[in-house]
Image (cartoon, rainbow, N blue to C red; front, side, top):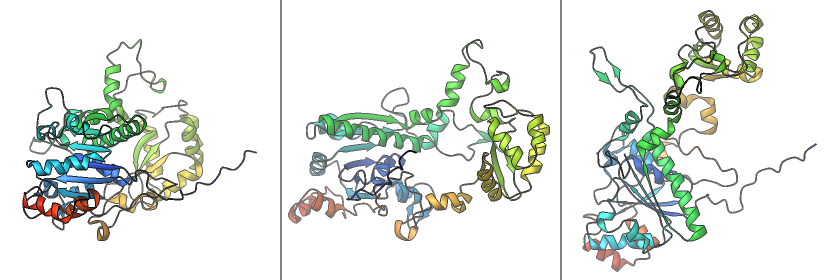
Length: 423
Protein backbone atom coordinates (compact mmCIF):
# COMPACT_ATOMS: atom_id res chain seq x y z
CA UNK A 1 0.00 0.00 0.00
CA UNK A 2 1.25 3.51 -0.72
CA UNK A 3 2.38 5.58 2.21
CA UNK A 4 -0.13 8.06 3.57
CA UNK A 5 0.33 11.59 2.30
CA UNK A 6 1.77 14.05 4.77
CA UNK A 7 -0.87 16.47 6.06
CA UNK A 8 -0.61 20.05 4.87
CA UNK A 9 0.72 22.23 7.66
CA UNK A 10 0.67 26.03 7.86
CA UNK A 11 4.04 27.68 7.34
CA UNK A 12 5.72 28.74 10.59
CA UNK A 13 5.48 32.40 9.69
CA UNK A 14 1.90 32.25 8.49
CA UNK A 15 2.88 35.01 6.06
CA UNK A 16 0.68 35.75 3.08
CA UNK A 17 2.18 34.71 -0.28
CA UNK A 18 2.83 38.30 -1.41
CA UNK A 19 3.96 39.67 1.94
CA UNK A 20 6.82 42.08 1.25
CA UNK A 21 5.65 42.96 -2.25
CA UNK A 22 4.94 46.66 -2.74
CA UNK A 23 2.76 47.91 -5.57
CA UNK A 24 2.09 51.52 -6.53
CA UNK A 25 -1.25 51.86 -8.25
CA UNK A 26 -2.55 54.82 -10.25
CA UNK A 27 -6.05 53.88 -11.29
CA UNK A 28 -9.47 55.07 -12.28
CA UNK A 29 -12.58 52.92 -11.99
CA UNK A 30 -12.68 49.14 -12.49
CA UNK A 31 -9.17 48.42 -13.86
CA UNK A 32 -7.88 49.10 -10.35
CA UNK A 33 -8.85 45.50 -9.64
CA UNK A 34 -5.35 44.51 -10.77
CA UNK A 35 -4.15 45.81 -7.43
CA UNK A 36 -7.07 44.22 -5.61
CA UNK A 37 -6.00 40.72 -6.60
CA UNK A 38 -2.48 41.46 -5.37
CA UNK A 39 -3.64 43.05 -2.12
CA UNK A 40 -5.85 40.03 -1.43
CA UNK A 41 -2.68 37.90 -1.49
CA UNK A 42 -0.82 40.13 0.93
CA UNK A 43 0.89 42.74 -1.23
CA UNK A 44 1.08 46.29 0.07
CA UNK A 45 -0.85 48.29 -2.51
CA UNK A 46 -0.60 52.07 -2.32
CA UNK A 47 -3.22 53.77 -4.46
CA UNK A 48 -1.98 57.16 -5.63
CA UNK A 49 -5.00 59.25 -6.53
CA UNK A 50 -5.69 62.88 -7.38
CA UNK A 51 -6.53 65.21 -4.50
CA UNK A 52 -10.27 64.94 -5.17
CA UNK A 53 -10.00 61.15 -5.20
CA UNK A 54 -10.90 58.54 -7.79
CA UNK A 55 -14.47 59.25 -8.91
CA UNK A 56 -15.16 55.53 -8.72
CA UNK A 57 -16.72 56.36 -5.36
CA UNK A 58 -19.71 57.89 -7.14
CA UNK A 59 -20.08 55.42 -10.02
CA UNK A 60 -22.87 52.86 -10.51
CA UNK A 61 -25.12 51.52 -7.78
CA UNK A 62 -25.63 50.79 -4.96
CA UNK A 63 -24.10 53.67 -2.99
CA UNK A 64 -23.22 52.43 0.49
CA UNK A 65 -22.60 55.01 3.20
CA UNK A 66 -21.61 57.58 0.60
CA UNK A 67 -19.38 55.43 -1.61
CA UNK A 68 -20.17 53.01 -4.40
CA UNK A 69 -20.01 49.26 -3.96
CA UNK A 70 -17.53 49.36 -6.84
CA UNK A 71 -15.15 51.38 -4.69
CA UNK A 72 -15.67 49.29 -1.55
CA UNK A 73 -14.89 46.12 -3.48
CA UNK A 74 -12.06 47.20 -5.75
CA UNK A 75 -10.09 49.24 -3.24
CA UNK A 76 -10.34 46.98 -0.21
CA UNK A 77 -7.01 46.29 1.42
CA UNK A 78 -5.30 49.29 -0.16
CA UNK A 79 -3.78 52.50 1.19
CA UNK A 80 -4.68 55.86 -0.32
CA UNK A 81 -2.16 58.63 -0.93
CA UNK A 82 -3.31 61.80 -2.65
CA UNK A 83 -0.78 63.45 -4.93
CA UNK A 84 -1.27 66.28 -7.37
CA UNK A 85 1.06 64.95 -10.03
CA UNK A 86 0.90 68.27 -11.85
CA UNK A 87 3.32 69.58 -9.24
CA UNK A 88 7.06 68.88 -9.20
CA UNK A 89 6.94 68.12 -5.49
CA UNK A 90 4.31 65.38 -5.95
CA UNK A 91 6.26 63.87 -8.84
CA UNK A 92 9.32 63.65 -6.59
CA UNK A 93 7.25 61.82 -3.98
CA UNK A 94 6.06 59.39 -6.65
CA UNK A 95 9.64 58.69 -7.69
CA UNK A 96 10.55 58.02 -4.07
CA UNK A 97 7.70 55.53 -3.83
CA UNK A 98 8.94 53.72 -6.92
CA UNK A 99 12.53 53.32 -5.69
CA UNK A 100 11.70 50.33 -3.50
CA UNK A 101 8.51 49.17 -5.20
CA UNK A 102 8.10 45.93 -7.09
CA UNK A 103 5.47 47.17 -9.52
CA UNK A 104 3.60 50.20 -10.81
CA UNK A 105 0.09 49.76 -12.18
CA UNK A 106 -1.23 52.38 -14.57
CA UNK A 107 -4.93 51.53 -14.70
CA UNK A 108 -6.20 54.23 -17.04
CA UNK A 109 -5.48 55.35 -20.59
CA UNK A 110 -1.94 54.30 -21.55
CA UNK A 111 0.68 57.02 -21.34
CA UNK A 112 -0.98 59.01 -18.56
CA UNK A 113 2.09 58.68 -16.34
CA UNK A 114 4.55 59.17 -19.19
CA UNK A 115 3.02 62.57 -19.88
CA UNK A 116 4.10 63.53 -16.35
CA UNK A 117 7.61 62.22 -16.86
CA UNK A 118 6.73 59.12 -14.85
CA UNK A 119 6.51 56.51 -17.60
CA UNK A 120 8.28 53.17 -17.66
CA UNK A 121 11.53 54.44 -19.17
CA UNK A 122 11.64 57.30 -16.67
CA UNK A 123 11.00 55.06 -13.68
CA UNK A 124 13.38 52.34 -14.87
CA UNK A 125 16.24 54.76 -14.30
CA UNK A 126 15.20 54.89 -10.65
CA UNK A 127 14.39 51.19 -10.24
CA UNK A 128 15.86 48.86 -12.90
CA UNK A 129 13.84 45.86 -11.64
CA UNK A 130 10.48 47.63 -11.79
CA UNK A 131 7.47 45.87 -13.30
CA UNK A 132 5.24 48.39 -15.06
CA UNK A 133 1.72 47.31 -16.02
CA UNK A 134 -0.66 49.50 -17.98
CA UNK A 135 -4.24 48.30 -18.36
CA UNK A 136 -6.88 50.05 -20.41
CA UNK A 137 -10.00 49.45 -22.43
CA UNK A 138 -8.60 48.69 -25.89
CA UNK A 139 -4.86 48.67 -25.17
CA UNK A 140 -2.02 50.81 -26.44
CA UNK A 141 -2.37 50.05 -30.15
CA UNK A 142 -5.02 49.69 -32.83
CA UNK A 143 -7.69 52.03 -34.18
CA UNK A 144 -9.68 51.93 -30.92
CA UNK A 145 -6.74 52.66 -28.62
CA UNK A 146 -7.76 56.23 -27.81
CA UNK A 147 -11.51 55.71 -27.61
CA UNK A 148 -13.15 56.45 -24.25
CA UNK A 149 -15.16 53.45 -23.08
CA UNK A 150 -16.66 51.56 -20.15
CA UNK A 151 -16.66 47.92 -19.13
CA UNK A 152 -19.60 46.54 -21.08
CA UNK A 153 -18.03 47.83 -24.32
CA UNK A 154 -15.40 45.10 -24.15
CA UNK A 155 -18.06 42.41 -23.92
CA UNK A 156 -20.10 43.76 -26.84
CA UNK A 157 -16.88 44.18 -28.84
CA UNK A 158 -15.89 40.57 -28.12
CA UNK A 159 -19.29 39.27 -29.20
CA UNK A 160 -20.20 38.07 -25.72
CA UNK A 161 -23.35 40.18 -25.21
CA UNK A 162 -25.95 40.49 -27.95
CA UNK A 163 -28.82 43.02 -27.94
CA UNK A 164 -32.31 42.02 -26.84
CA UNK A 165 -35.44 43.90 -27.93
CA UNK A 166 -38.15 45.24 -25.62
CA UNK A 167 -41.89 45.32 -26.30
CA UNK A 168 -41.52 48.65 -28.12
CA UNK A 169 -38.90 47.23 -30.46
CA UNK A 170 -35.97 49.08 -28.92
CA UNK A 171 -32.71 47.12 -28.45
CA UNK A 172 -31.28 46.96 -24.94
CA UNK A 173 -28.53 45.23 -23.00
CA UNK A 174 -29.77 42.02 -21.37
CA UNK A 175 -28.65 41.05 -17.89
CA UNK A 176 -25.29 39.36 -18.12
CA UNK A 177 -22.07 38.76 -16.25
CA UNK A 178 -19.41 41.28 -17.28
CA UNK A 179 -16.27 39.56 -18.56
CA UNK A 180 -13.67 42.01 -19.84
CA UNK A 181 -13.76 44.37 -16.87
CA UNK A 182 -13.07 41.42 -14.54
CA UNK A 183 -10.85 39.21 -16.69
CA UNK A 184 -8.58 42.09 -17.72
CA UNK A 185 -7.40 42.85 -14.18
CA UNK A 186 -7.03 39.14 -13.45
CA UNK A 187 -4.73 38.67 -16.45
CA UNK A 188 -2.97 41.88 -15.42
CA UNK A 189 -2.27 40.56 -11.92
CA UNK A 190 -0.94 37.33 -13.42
CA UNK A 191 1.37 39.32 -15.68
CA UNK A 192 2.61 41.46 -12.80
CA UNK A 193 3.49 38.37 -10.79
CA UNK A 194 5.31 36.89 -13.78
CA UNK A 195 7.26 40.14 -14.10
CA UNK A 196 8.15 40.20 -10.41
CA UNK A 197 9.35 36.59 -10.63
CA UNK A 198 11.59 37.54 -13.54
CA UNK A 199 12.84 40.68 -11.79
CA UNK A 200 13.81 38.82 -8.65
CA UNK A 201 15.65 36.20 -10.67
CA UNK A 202 17.43 38.52 -13.13
CA UNK A 203 17.22 42.05 -11.75
CA UNK A 204 15.51 43.14 -14.95
CA UNK A 205 12.23 45.00 -15.08
CA UNK A 206 9.26 44.46 -17.40
CA UNK A 207 6.71 46.59 -19.23
CA UNK A 208 3.45 44.81 -19.87
CA UNK A 209 0.17 46.10 -21.19
CA UNK A 210 -3.26 44.57 -21.30
CA UNK A 211 -6.56 45.51 -22.92
CA UNK A 212 -9.78 44.54 -21.20
CA UNK A 213 -11.23 43.95 -24.67
CA UNK A 214 -8.50 41.40 -25.42
CA UNK A 215 -9.21 39.71 -22.10
CA UNK A 216 -12.91 39.41 -22.92
CA UNK A 217 -12.09 37.80 -26.27
CA UNK A 218 -9.58 35.47 -24.63
CA UNK A 219 -12.14 34.29 -22.06
CA UNK A 220 -14.67 33.55 -24.81
CA UNK A 221 -12.13 31.73 -26.97
CA UNK A 222 -14.24 28.61 -27.53
CA UNK A 223 -17.00 30.29 -29.54
CA UNK A 224 -14.69 32.46 -31.63
CA UNK A 225 -12.31 29.60 -32.33
CA UNK A 226 -15.21 27.31 -33.23
CA UNK A 227 -16.50 29.75 -35.86
CA UNK A 228 -12.95 30.02 -37.19
CA UNK A 229 -12.65 26.23 -37.32
CA UNK A 230 -15.92 26.02 -39.26
CA UNK A 231 -14.38 28.13 -42.01
CA UNK A 232 -12.37 25.05 -42.90
CA UNK A 233 -13.95 22.32 -45.08
CA UNK A 234 -16.10 19.63 -43.45
CA UNK A 235 -13.59 17.06 -44.57
CA UNK A 236 -11.28 18.57 -41.94
CA UNK A 237 -13.62 19.91 -39.24
CA UNK A 238 -16.82 18.15 -38.22
CA UNK A 239 -19.19 17.97 -35.30
CA UNK A 240 -19.07 15.37 -32.53
CA UNK A 241 -19.64 11.66 -33.17
CA UNK A 242 -22.68 11.83 -30.84
CA UNK A 243 -24.31 14.27 -33.29
CA UNK A 244 -23.51 12.10 -36.30
CA UNK A 245 -20.72 14.62 -36.98
CA UNK A 246 -23.18 17.44 -37.69
CA UNK A 247 -21.72 20.87 -36.96
CA UNK A 248 -23.48 22.46 -34.02
CA UNK A 249 -23.57 26.15 -33.20
CA UNK A 250 -20.61 27.18 -31.00
CA UNK A 251 -20.71 27.07 -27.21
CA UNK A 252 -23.99 26.99 -25.34
CA UNK A 253 -25.84 28.22 -28.43
CA UNK A 254 -25.63 24.65 -29.68
CA UNK A 255 -27.29 23.29 -26.54
CA UNK A 256 -30.84 24.60 -26.93
CA UNK A 257 -32.06 21.27 -28.27
CA UNK A 258 -30.07 19.27 -25.73
CA UNK A 259 -31.91 16.83 -23.47
CA UNK A 260 -29.34 14.93 -21.41
CA UNK A 261 -27.52 18.23 -20.87
CA UNK A 262 -30.28 20.68 -20.05
CA UNK A 263 -32.08 22.75 -17.42
CA UNK A 264 -35.13 21.18 -15.75
CA UNK A 265 -37.63 22.44 -13.21
CA UNK A 266 -37.46 20.87 -9.78
CA UNK A 267 -40.34 21.08 -7.31
CA UNK A 268 -39.01 24.41 -5.99
CA UNK A 269 -36.66 25.82 -8.63
CA UNK A 270 -34.33 24.53 -11.34
CA UNK A 271 -31.51 22.06 -11.76
CA UNK A 272 -28.92 21.59 -14.48
CA UNK A 273 -28.68 17.98 -15.68
CA UNK A 274 -25.34 17.20 -17.35
CA UNK A 275 -25.29 13.48 -18.18
CA UNK A 276 -23.54 13.84 -21.53
CA UNK A 277 -21.28 10.89 -20.68
CA UNK A 278 -22.93 7.49 -20.99
CA UNK A 279 -21.70 6.46 -17.52
CA UNK A 280 -23.47 9.36 -15.79
CA UNK A 281 -26.64 8.74 -17.82
CA UNK A 282 -26.66 5.07 -16.84
CA UNK A 283 -26.13 5.92 -13.16
CA UNK A 284 -29.02 8.39 -13.29
CA UNK A 285 -31.41 5.89 -14.87
CA UNK A 286 -30.46 3.23 -12.33
CA UNK A 287 -30.83 5.71 -9.47
CA UNK A 288 -34.40 6.66 -10.42
CA UNK A 289 -35.24 3.03 -11.20
CA UNK A 290 -35.75 3.80 -14.89
CA UNK A 291 -33.26 1.52 -16.63
CA UNK A 292 -35.85 1.23 -19.36
CA UNK A 293 -34.81 4.72 -20.46
CA UNK A 294 -31.17 3.69 -20.66
CA UNK A 295 -32.00 0.55 -22.60
CA UNK A 296 -34.09 2.56 -25.04
CA UNK A 297 -31.71 5.51 -25.38
CA UNK A 298 -28.23 4.35 -24.33
CA UNK A 299 -26.48 7.15 -26.21
CA UNK A 300 -22.81 7.46 -27.10
CA UNK A 301 -19.91 7.15 -24.71
CA UNK A 302 -19.06 10.88 -24.66
CA UNK A 303 -20.67 14.22 -25.46
CA UNK A 304 -24.16 12.92 -26.21
CA UNK A 305 -26.88 15.46 -25.35
CA UNK A 306 -29.69 13.50 -27.05
CA UNK A 307 -30.57 16.55 -29.13
CA UNK A 308 -34.17 16.93 -30.14
CA UNK A 309 -35.42 13.87 -28.27
CA UNK A 310 -38.68 15.46 -27.10
CA UNK A 311 -40.03 12.23 -25.67
CA UNK A 312 -37.02 11.80 -23.39
CA UNK A 313 -37.24 15.46 -22.41
CA UNK A 314 -40.83 15.02 -21.24
CA UNK A 315 -39.89 11.93 -19.23
CA UNK A 316 -37.04 13.79 -17.55
CA UNK A 317 -39.21 16.84 -16.87
CA UNK A 318 -41.71 14.66 -15.00
CA UNK A 319 -38.93 12.98 -13.00
CA UNK A 320 -37.17 16.20 -11.96
CA UNK A 321 -40.44 17.76 -10.82
CA UNK A 322 -40.70 15.18 -8.02
CA UNK A 323 -37.91 16.55 -5.77
CA UNK A 324 -36.50 19.86 -4.61
CA UNK A 325 -33.30 21.25 -6.06
CA UNK A 326 -31.42 20.52 -2.83
CA UNK A 327 -32.68 16.94 -2.79
CA UNK A 328 -31.58 16.34 -6.38
CA UNK A 329 -28.13 17.79 -5.75
CA UNK A 330 -27.57 15.64 -2.67
CA UNK A 331 -28.95 12.57 -4.43
CA UNK A 332 -26.62 13.04 -7.40
CA UNK A 333 -23.62 12.57 -5.12
CA UNK A 334 -24.94 9.26 -3.83
CA UNK A 335 -25.48 7.73 -7.28
CA UNK A 336 -22.57 9.45 -9.07
CA UNK A 337 -24.39 11.45 -11.71
CA UNK A 338 -24.21 15.10 -12.72
CA UNK A 339 -26.79 17.53 -11.32
CA UNK A 340 -26.14 21.10 -10.22
CA UNK A 341 -28.33 23.81 -8.70
CA UNK A 342 -29.35 26.77 -10.86
CA UNK A 343 -28.84 29.82 -8.66
CA UNK A 344 -29.35 33.51 -9.28
CA UNK A 345 -27.00 36.24 -8.06
CA UNK A 346 -29.51 36.69 -5.23
CA UNK A 347 -29.98 33.06 -4.21
CA UNK A 348 -26.28 32.17 -4.42
CA UNK A 349 -25.81 33.66 -0.95
CA UNK A 350 -27.95 30.87 0.54
CA UNK A 351 -26.31 27.98 -1.30
CA UNK A 352 -24.62 25.60 1.20
CA UNK A 353 -21.51 25.24 -0.98
CA UNK A 354 -21.14 29.01 -1.16
CA UNK A 355 -21.66 29.36 2.60
CA UNK A 356 -19.12 26.64 3.37
CA UNK A 357 -16.29 27.85 1.13
CA UNK A 358 -16.90 31.47 0.35
CA UNK A 359 -19.56 33.62 1.96
CA UNK A 360 -19.47 37.38 2.26
CA UNK A 361 -17.08 39.61 4.12
CA UNK A 362 -19.50 41.56 6.34
CA UNK A 363 -20.25 45.23 5.88
CA UNK A 364 -19.82 45.86 9.59
CA UNK A 365 -16.06 45.36 9.22
CA UNK A 366 -15.44 45.85 5.49
CA UNK A 367 -17.77 48.69 4.50
CA UNK A 368 -19.88 46.47 2.21
CA UNK A 369 -20.89 42.82 2.08
CA UNK A 370 -18.58 41.46 -0.59
CA UNK A 371 -16.99 38.37 -2.00
CA UNK A 372 -13.26 37.99 -1.53
CA UNK A 373 -10.60 36.12 -3.46
CA UNK A 374 -11.36 32.52 -4.43
CA UNK A 375 -7.70 31.59 -3.85
CA UNK A 376 -6.96 29.47 -0.80
CA UNK A 377 -3.44 28.68 0.44
CA UNK A 378 -3.45 25.72 2.78
CA UNK A 379 -0.05 26.59 4.22
CA UNK A 380 -0.49 30.34 4.67
CA UNK A 381 -3.06 32.84 5.85
CA UNK A 382 -4.32 35.50 3.50
CA UNK A 383 -4.90 38.94 5.01
CA UNK A 384 -8.33 40.08 6.06
CA UNK A 385 -8.57 43.17 3.83
CA UNK A 386 -9.13 46.54 5.39
CA UNK A 387 -12.09 48.61 4.15
CA UNK A 388 -11.56 50.68 1.01
CA UNK A 389 -9.93 53.98 2.03
CA UNK A 390 -11.14 57.52 1.79
CA UNK A 391 -9.07 59.73 -0.50
CA UNK A 392 -5.81 60.54 1.24
CA UNK A 393 -6.60 58.45 4.31
CA UNK A 394 -3.03 57.14 4.49
CA UNK A 395 -1.11 60.25 3.49
CA UNK A 396 0.79 60.61 6.77
CA UNK A 397 1.33 56.86 7.12
CA UNK A 398 2.76 56.41 3.62
CA UNK A 399 4.88 59.55 3.71
CA UNK A 400 6.13 58.89 7.23
CA UNK A 401 6.33 55.13 7.66
CA UNK A 402 6.93 54.03 4.07
CA UNK A 403 9.11 56.88 2.80
CA UNK A 404 10.56 58.03 6.10
CA UNK A 405 9.69 61.70 5.63
CA UNK A 406 9.76 63.75 8.81
CA UNK A 407 7.02 66.10 9.91
CA UNK A 408 8.75 69.13 8.47
CA UNK A 409 8.98 67.65 5.00
CA UNK A 410 5.36 66.47 5.08
CA UNK A 411 4.26 69.94 6.12
CA UNK A 412 6.27 71.43 3.26
CA UNK A 413 4.55 69.12 0.78
CA UNK A 414 1.17 70.22 2.09
CA UNK A 415 2.15 73.84 1.82
CA UNK A 416 3.31 73.32 -1.78
CA UNK A 417 -0.06 71.76 -2.70
CA UNK A 418 1.53 68.42 -3.57
CA UNK A 419 -1.15 66.53 -1.65
CA UNK A 420 -4.03 68.72 -2.74
CA UNK A 421 -6.11 71.17 -0.78
CA UNK A 422 -7.34 69.76 2.54
CA UNK A 423 -5.05 66.71 2.38
